[in-house]
Image (cartoon, rainbow, N blue to C red):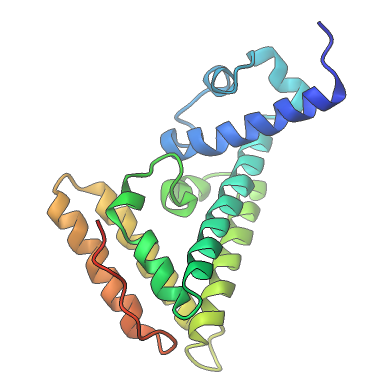
Length: 201
């Protein structure tokens, strides 16, 4: 049965959506094209009609995942406009987010993998990271005139690192301690927010 142009584009978007989640769960090299396409309800043969290569899909899926992450930051900030950083910290440095392997932060899930990928994947990550830094800078300002976004860089590094460490250990109490210590540090660095987040679950 011939696939219409509209259906082909819908299938393509579905593959990107599914890949953005499966890559976060398994890594770029931890899942093959057959399983990626099966996750989208399509055959492997359809892949090459939609993408140039797996690297092409990895770059597009990375952009999709980072756009989704940015949307979550926006939603959290908009829910508490009086304390946007505290709101983002509250969801990001939580045990719930820590457990979200397929829908969680792609920088945490794929950051080390992205370092081994080609320029298109790295460009997608750079754009997403830059977006996060711009949001943080709008909330906390710059550390000083010589280091643009220095405070934002320190905060993002602390938040991402804390979730990486929290996911890397079996001890749930230790995971919570990493997340709480990072939250305390981030909010202490911030001159823009005085509202402490609730104790994360």
